[in-house]
Amino acid sequence: MERTFCMIKPDGVSRNLTGEILVRLERKGYKVLGLKKMIISRELAEHHYGEHKGKPFFDGLVTFITSGPVVAMVLEGPGVIAELRKLMGATNPKDAVPGTIRADYATSIDENVVHGSANADDAQREIGLFFKPEELVN
Ligand code: IDP
Ligand code: MG
Image (spheres, rainbow, N blue to C red):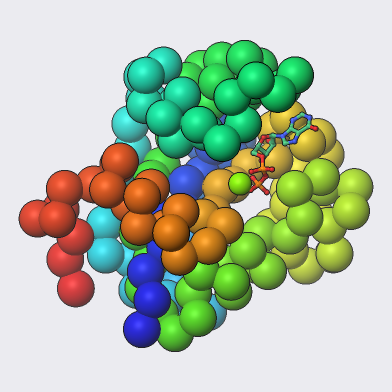
């Protein structure tokens, strides 16, 4: 059993896609252990996206992710880390396979609706950044 961190980005929340995305993840069979709507501080955003510091899109990314509420969640299920990435689709929606969340709901790499941890180390780190252990309920 694995756990991963998933987040509906401000574009997804403001476009009222939260329910659509949760339906896909729940129907797939993943358990939602933690779920909250929140506005990310600049400090948290810079930590969360720390691997991208120094890249040309970093400042825009931090500004965007802090621009409005997100819905953060922890998902649990077999193979959920890699499988969530498949359900999300490629980072650039232009390259995302139809049927994936980004292919179906996004048109821009800057605003691609959803985040999912890239690997087990990131999953553990990101879950810890956004949730206290007691906020996760099975
Ligand atoms: P991921 O979200 O698929 O894991 P990352 O490479 O970790 O993709 O990048 C984090 C986020 O930064 C992406 O979801 C996207 O919104 C944004 N991003 C990544 N690469 C670019 C780029 O080349 N230009 C603009 N934004 C980008
Ligand atoms: Mg990433």
